[in-house]
Length: 86
Image (cartoon, rainbow, N blue to C red):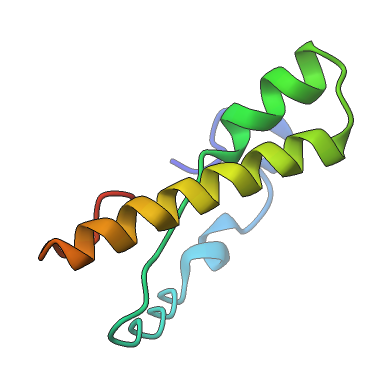
């Protein structure tokens, strides 16, 4: 089904793209916390809509990460597993 509706791809051997299985990521070491800030939700309004610079957007992302880390640490100290942002 990959690229079937694209005329330029009709003569290409697209099956080769999916011939091998992707490697599994290494398991995360115990005690590490995964924080995934919504970067797209920050850059879209700040840079593309409000024409702010990238430093401002990165500062906002950094603040979001620090907030998520603080909340995760507090959750772990309270006996939780710290998986709210995974």
